[in-house]
Image (cartoon, rainbow, N blue to C red):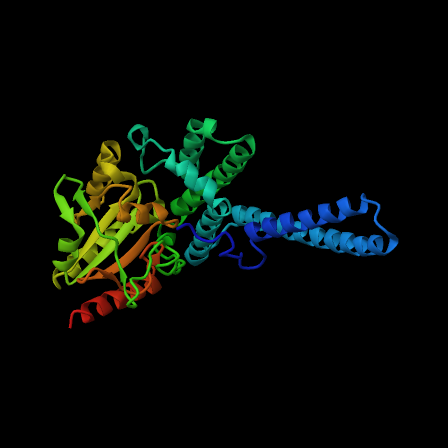
Length: 354
């Protein structure tokens, strides 16, 4: 499932989503008080209404101030100029978090938009600005949204485009800043769309699919045949996803010595979309990735699970009984903390076999 709209607050101020939501609540209270005053109630009620009116007005002003501060904070991120690789990495992470927040603020709208995408007709390259990609699919689907919804989507995509330009600038000036990112957010299986089996274990959704070369793949056979399986959800235009591919390939080679494997699931390739599969295969080849990438039907349980993920990349560890081990790793598995957390889950999965 998409993450809660209230799940994150910016480090120094209330997040824009929380601020805008609270502001709307205060605006509603403000309007109610104003309407009550126009009803010419008795003096006692009028005095109470005046108190409500003043209270709502004060809080509305406060919430609007916080909202403006949040917007100002975002603009400040865009103008920051780091002086070291470490500062660049910290800024890179903050920008990535801000990009995620923009879409989480209107999660249902973005989900509706992504469901309209015709993957066969997409021109996807690793050099595309993700903001441009979003603006294109918004334009293609404009007939399916109201003017207000289009404004929300276009405003968000415009902000993301600026963030992507800043990220590209950081990558050019500080090439290692991507690999120095701090640990990403983590969500439990329930937040990511997984329901417990009731016995304290979370089974990975079963599927019958194929790899990118058309070879049939069954989840039951896949997981049972490995001591541990690291399942990485990604998509082709996701920069953090692409940045971690070399690390995942190295992990795959290491796990192969222990009877395990890394498996990739590119969200664009669901339903066997030929164009998306071709793009994914081309990118994986350029990055030297040898581990299996698979797809399955979008209306299957595994497909719904994939479509329900909000953050990419997201990595799950699955034991040979097909159960998810611990919590997923959200964000590129390139930072020391992420690598350590992933290794602990792998060790636990192998231990589960004993």
